[in-house]
Length: 165
Image (cartoon, rainbow, N blue to C red; front, top):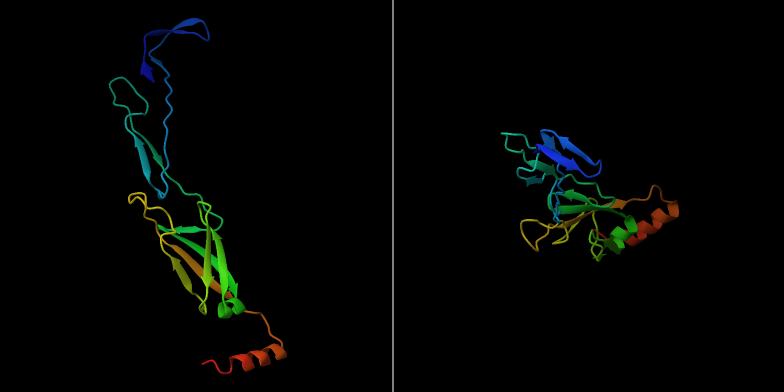
């Protein structure tokens, strides 16, 4: 609102006199990659105006939407991947699509133990105050064990794994 004595309303074709008239302004926010939940963007003195009063600031607060695959942990991104016991013992390749659409291929060549986590440096969230730096991508591996084995399968596993200590 801005003070006004009289003005001509073109749409109505009327002369109108009042203390205030409405003025609209569009405020543009450029969201930067990596901004965290709670980041505040302030537009000083862009709030309502009244005679004799300094206009208030307009403040926007960033919220984050959950992602279907990744979870944010500070500047890191965390993803859960389930692999079979066979893959944990013999290897596998993980194919992940990053938030910016790139494909990551992560080979699992070592034996994966339950609860293992792989850290891929510099593939997490951009650090907004440090250009070019990113957090890490943390891949949490969950080894899925078979729910049951036949007598023959158990026997074969004993034979194959007998020499492993």
